[in-house]
Image: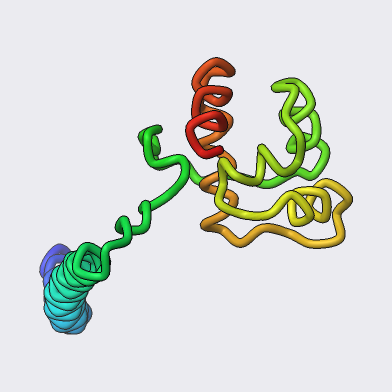
Length: 155
């Protein structure tokens, strides 16, 4: 009886190892392909970032050659982004703007858009793009004194 039980147990273990080996081989291949794809994407990202940097450098050089100042990267470039994704709320935008005591036009200057666009966002007629939502979030990170100073600087 013990010979049959031990033989059956050994056979089950052998078949299980064989099945697991086949599964693991498939996972290994998939993992290898994914690592290669990730490496390729990283190379492409580095290449694109390098091209973007070169493009900005050339644009600044052209602007200097033409005698006009280079365009600022962003009106709120003085505040460092903490990387958290931002959500947009029309009522919160309006509350924040009124709390700072700014007109829609002045608040728009902080994000690089018009006052009419700010009004449309506050009324819910339109929504900002994700980049604009990030810029609005950066304005909220600024102190009220810094906001007023930035508006005065942009005037």
